Picture (cartoon, rainbow, N blue to C red):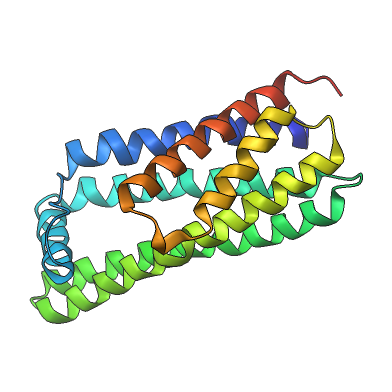
Length: 211
C-alpha cells in the first residue's frame, strides 16, 4: 500500500466512522445533554451522564477521537504529498493539521481526568476540568479552517490532484470555519459535517485516480 492509497483510505473511512460515533453511537450509549443548560450545569450534566455509563462511554470517546485523529492525519498527508506549484502551501497546511492533532488528545485527557475526579467526589474541581476540556476545542475550527484554506489553495495551484469543485468546497469550508467561535454552534457543526463529506469525496477521488 503506497502513501496515496493509505491517505485515501484515511480520508474515506475515518470521517464517516467519526460522524457515526459522535452522532449515532455516543447518544445511544452515553445519552444526550441538554444544550440549553448554562455552561457549568451542562458540564455537570456531562459528568453525571458519563459516570452512569463509564466503561462504554470511555471506549466510545476514545474510538471517536481515534477516528478524528485519522481524519486529520489524512489531511496532513494530503498536504504533504503536494510536490508541484502547491508544495509550499501544502507543507504549511500539513504542519497546521499536525498541530491540530493535539487538540482532541488534550481535550480527551482532560475530560477523562474530570470523570475520575468526579467519581472521587470533588464535584467543583471536576466541573472546572471538564470546562477546560470543552474550552480546548474552541480553537479547533479556527485552525482546522486555516488548514483547509491553505490546503485548498495548494491544491488549486497543484492542478489535477483533486477536481476543482472539491478543492473549491474545501477552500470555502475553511473560510466559513475561520470565524470559529463566532459561529452559531448548530451552523458550525453543519459546516463541519459538510466539510467531512468533501473530505470523503476527496478520498474516493484519490483512491480511484491512477498515478
